Length: 614
Ligand SMILES: CC(=O)N[C@H]1[C@@H](OP(=O)(O)OP(=O)(O)OC[C@H]2O[C@@H](n3ccc(=O)[nH]c3=O)[C@H](O)[C@@H]2O)O[C@H](CO)[C@@H](O)[C@@H]1O[C@H](C)C(=O)N[C@@H](C)C(=O)N[C@H](CCC(=O)O)C(=O)O
Ligand SMILES: Nc1ncnc2c1ncn2[C@@H]1O[C@H](COP(=O)(O)OP(=O)(O)OP(=O)(O)O)[C@@H](O)[C@H]1O
Ligand SMILES: N[C@H](CCC[C@H](N)C(=O)O)C(=O)O
Image (cartoon, rainbow, N blue to C red):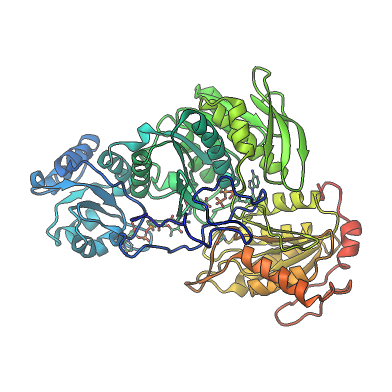
């Protein structure tokens, strides 16, 4: 597959012991929860253009038409309007658009955007060299753009216009796709996979391919492409829609982050269904407060962005959204995994298991649909019910939807089991915010007879406010809490650890497990594995599917699944018995604060209430 960073046919993309690499995620022998993540973040074929995929065929659009589009919608554009800035536009036509000078292809509009760190206008020369046909920019970039000799379209807010322009250049591809967009602090990726499972099942019956766009990967049918971020920038998103349409995709599930809504990445899209999962503290470096964060997500549920809403009745912010949407007369359907009778769809007869759960989805007309989800934890019942409600709202038969959801083989890095023949549970999960850490620890506690040993770090250059709460959650809810590094990025890993430890120390000593500090993530994982006994659980949290660790701007290969598997094998082969029931001595790399008795006692007598062990 050219021009696309594809991972479908890579041998790394399968589990040990599986058969030959399959182009499909379907039909593999892997048990639930073991789907692998994309293996190489930067895989490109030598002859391909850098950057995300583009459609093979685009009908050239005269630049004058684009200039008119901008002027028509923006009579207030400065210096005589966009058209006046565009020079001799009659001779120029356009076949693509990008906001990244490095990804320019011949015939593109290069959108030179003002950013928080840089101005895209500083890269116009590179764009010209690579064959840009024109530049879209703001007044601050006009002069630099003109110096290239290219036609220049100037508007006050080019980021705000880029999406509609991209949609116009690629022939409004989103209009030909059934689109389900999912937002919320936690569960977007999982729900998107589950929705795609339902869409696939429907497509098997009705024809066509399905698509997926999200944090881990994008999928065009069975082809898997590494993602750069949760929601692509508008230029890349519209191109991806066009590729999907070109290859016969009829429906797609997509994650919509709050960044995407604020930064115009989904401009030019109207989702058939917008799904709201939940809201809890996260990204408070980007959003000044929770209200701003809620309002950002709220934008998805306006006629400009969605035709109908599916909302979590059980979530505090979900309930507020539901109430507001009903008052506004916006079409909305609610769901409740807790079985609230006022919700349109609710879960009954929920049976939670270590590998997944079953439930009955009860609909507004009393219909009863047997459902299942191949991932453990009550929150995944909620994600599955969200998916089912969205699929039904999009017109898919509920039984087909439920069948498709239950047949999803797993979600990379989400409650992903690692099995190297050990007699304890080992799990990799992407929990990297307080609410998710708590949810996953509660879920694993429920299915663990013995002790829970959990490893967690916090990402650098990301919301610092969540660090103490994450440290506290780990200390409170695990028997061994190993605090370690995530992606420190430009920050001092020890400073991040100090903030986590501060939170852990706030938990009264009798309510917390043994707290260990180990800056080196692989060593931290080994430390957790070293403490595991039969019937225990080892959890490695925060990085999930990620394939690298960013330390001081250098990304080294690091895959929690592989490191955990290796640690388990090492321990099995060295046959070292689990350490005796006393904490290891404090060393410079493990300055352990005063800790309670070790886990055999903790698991039963850690003074936790039933509620805490819920
Ligand atoms: C806050 C945020 O999201 N910022 C994004 C934004 O940055 P920015 O506007 O400040 O851009 P900048 O770095 O100053 O650069 C200015 C312009 O120069 C361009 N440029 C820059 C260098 C160059 O060589 N050539 C070039 O053309 C850039 O493409 C950009 O258009 O536009 C950039 C270009 O697309 C993004 O890379 C950048 O994402 C940053 C790196 C990021 O980390 N974003 C994360 C937080 C994010 O978006 N996360 C959410 C997930 C949230 C969740 O659900 O957990 C997501 O949707 O992924
Ligand atoms: N509905 C939920 N409620 C609470 N926690 C959840 C829920 N769904 C998933 N989680 C937890 O959050 C983690 C991230 O889940 P997932 O990737 O599905 O969410 P996300 O919204 O896409 O996250 P992100 O925005 O950080 O990429 C999971 O690994 C799990 O620990
Ligand atoms: N979408 C999230 C992912 C965080 C994952 C975690 N491993 C980290 O690096 O902080 C972000 O970019 O903030």
